[in-house]
Every structure is written in C-alpha cells, then in structure tokens.
Length: 178
Image (cartoon, rainbow, N blue to C red; front, side):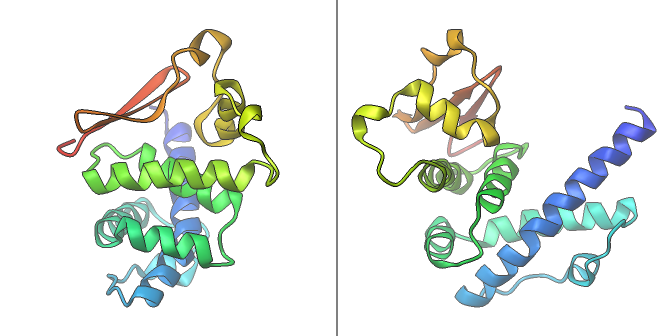
C-alpha cells in the first residue's frame, strides 16, 4: 500500500467515524448507554494523526458492542437525524467489519430493510418489486450488480442460522459465531 492510498484510507475511516459519532452519541443519550470518551471525535478534529483514527476505530467497535439491535431500530425509526447518508454509512460500516457477531448480523438485516424502505418510493406496489429493482435501490450502499448476478441475489435468507447477502463480486456470510 502506498503512502497516498494509506492516507486516503485513513481519511475515509475518519470521515466515517465523524459521521457516526453524533448518531451513536445521540442514541447512547436516548438509551442511557455509557460510552467511552474519544477526544478527537468529540473535538471534531479535521485531520487527525493515525493514532487518533485507530482510537476512533476502537471507539466504534466498543460502541457497536454496547448498542443492541432493538435500540438501533427504535432510534433510527424515530430520530430526525436519519438520512440516506447516515443509513448507508452505518450499513457499510457493519458490512466492512472483519469479525461479525450475531448482533452485527441482526443489525445488517435491519439496516438493509431500513435503507431500502428509506430510499424506495412510498407508494410502491409489491408487483413493482423484483430482484433488479431491489439491487438498484441498494446500489448506493452495496455497489452495482450485473445482470448475470441478479438471479443469484438473495437477501436475509435464513438457512440453519446462516444469513447470506450476495451482491456484486463479494458475499458477506454472517453466522452467530463469525
């Protein structure tokens, strides 16, 4: 990895952390969840050193462990802070985790549905929804799906405790012990 790509990766991680910080903080206040401090996130530092980005990543891991899916669901469905960008950022954040728990799986399941619901038109008829349409609506968060893959897409399919999400070139397999 070049120094430039490492810096852009750090900038992207910091951008994500700065977007999630006010959402997670508001959620924690609403549900009286004690969160650890993260001074550079709290201060809104624009361009932090690498160690601050690492601390923010650790902060996000700890917060993700403390927030339960029912709290995330209730908060995102009732707060005016919920936007397409927020939903997309939280969804992508959970999908990109190296290790996922059963709680992460449940959060991803909820976030996929919430993102689709938020982005799809309100008067949508069941007959208007097919795999191609779902892929199109979820594309901003999950990437493009070519026509050959559309027949293989399945979302939130339960089979023996395994949840699978296949989109584009990558599959995200989630199990309780992942």
